[in-house]
Length: 409
Image 1 (cartoon, rainbow, N blue to C red):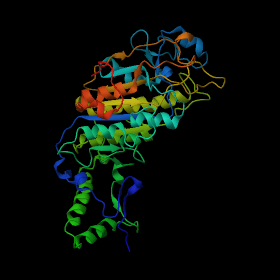
Image 2 (cartoon, rainbow, N blue to C red; image 1 turned 135 degrees about the vertical axis):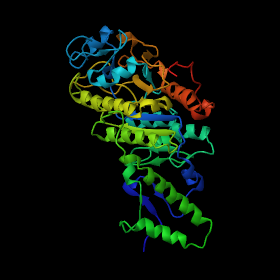
Image 3 (cartoon, one colour; image 1 turned 90 degrees about the vertical axis):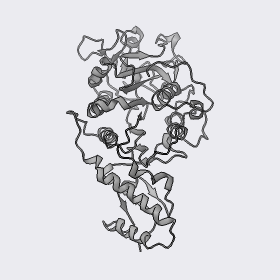
């Protein structure tokens, strides 16, 4: 006997025991042709080395602190790609250089959390909840953005994470989906066979409770809408070539959802393996491979969307940076300040924002790390306010008073 507990493939969403939410699914049919502003959050989990991602090649102390893993100065073999005479991109991030030059990519350096934890778990949690130092926050900052902007035209696809599970940043009162793959967004029941969806629909069609039957129908209509558009099966446009990786696949599917006009407003993707305590490498090696995947994925995303990037802002984050000085194993340890990227058509790019504190020993946080001069919440707040139009930023970041706008939007 088929259970009423129904799961989407890959465990991406559970519709539990008659618990369909009409508010969540009712607007699916009206989503088509709803071109929206979209905020995309990308989490580099594991603490990326922001000093080798966005290189302060004009800082002598950078080279003194990293004799084996520093990225060489621009104009030399495997050198950084110069941005403004002081900062440069890691050479494997070359696909993003044209976006910076066109003014579609901005960088905020020396940013991060005011909390000094070096725990991956705590720092990631603080960044996703938007409440550093507070461990009992139940919802995430992206979900609070959605709550602050509730509207009648919200669709089931308003907030989507292309991830195996819902991230903390999207947990909360507003509905959000975690979808491993768009082509797996279908219903199956306990039997695991292809007739599960039909059997489940038939069960509800015969239900005597007239309040439940329309609700179930709306849920299936939402999934049918996605299947009819088939966003996961459409090829990339404008010659975009995504890396064949989990991250490349995730941002490709986010681009497909945007182009499908299903009412997407907030999207989330992630990529890990940035915790390089040993053999980090410089222009080559572990970090170079990860940055190659990261940069090619973002560049393909922008190319694929073309003029639709006018509606999109993408923000990257990582829980904290790495130590300025390399360790004895050719790697870097848990640090403090880091770099964030902001990409999109509305972005005032071609500039590295924020106050640079310097890398001389007396300028370092606790004598070892890049100091934080921009609170990560100020970056998020500017994206929420300047792009999504959130006016009550205080409700999104409780207990925080944002500083003056950085100016990238």
